Amino acid sequence: MKNSITQYIRTLISRGLSQNTIKSYEKDLLQLMDFLTKYFENEQIDLNSVSRLYLRDFLRSLSLKGRNNRTLARKATVIKNFFSFCEKNDLIKVNSAENLKIPKFEKKLPKHFTEIEMEDLLSIPDLSSKFGVRNKAILELIYSSGLRISELASATIYRLDLDSKLIKIIGKGNKERIVPIGKKAVRALKNYLKIRNQFYSPDKRAQKEISDTLFLSKSGKPLTADELREILDKYIRLVAKTKGYSPHSIRHSFATHLITNGADLRAVQEMLGHSNLSTTEIYTHLSLKDLKKVYEQAHPKSKKQD
Image (cartoon, rainbow, N blue to C red):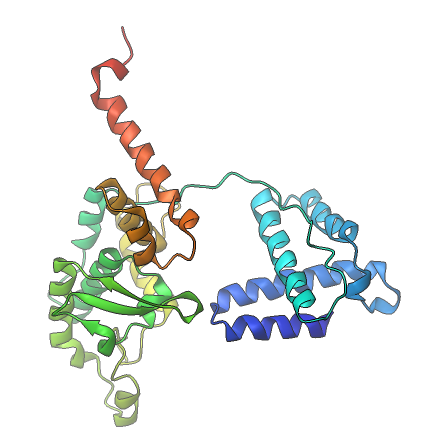
């Protein structure tokens, strides 16, 4: 089984999945492998002998340990995908996970900022320092174009067209998409690009290596996804009124504000880089929730009678 998992992980890597996703998949499958050893002599697991009952028993054991249905659904999906891979590559004769049921769970609506909160967030950076100018450009771009942090970290100058107000993004699965950039983000990026050379490393070789990277650290190296999260978290803590907000909340705000203001759902799907429209549809629920709140506050017939 270990060899099959290794082959599967290599396939995921070749598909361009993020490191976090790959690590999560591998961890889930190794956890399953450890659980299945009790059913086999000498701990040599034969995938052809792994029945659906074994897999259900694995999920049941996690449930008894207090794992919620969201976690169980993710692990069940990983298992089904793994066994499907094994079947397609003739590693097993029968796919015992084919009819494995995925536990149902209530999808949590993602946290997002109001338009006023986003204005507050975007106004925080101190433009008298080069770091403030850079961070303003980071905030404006991620909100203007709805980028993932990983996409922001991999953004390069040659994929940026400020004249046309567009940026070319390499998203999940190495899929390429072109996303519009708003006027305020264009202005912030132009201001940053004027002082970007102040971040250059004095090392000529390092300077050449990072010459195309859009956002640089104080040492002149490309800002990593973790460093970008740290920068954004610092500002978010000043605006967020409750717990649960993260840099990804800015992307959620981008999508929610677009749909609330009448944007086409499929257009938002394209800009976000979602493979399935169903993933984007969650923002319609957010928008309807906001509209209902406005209605209840404003419509005379919705107010409680004294």
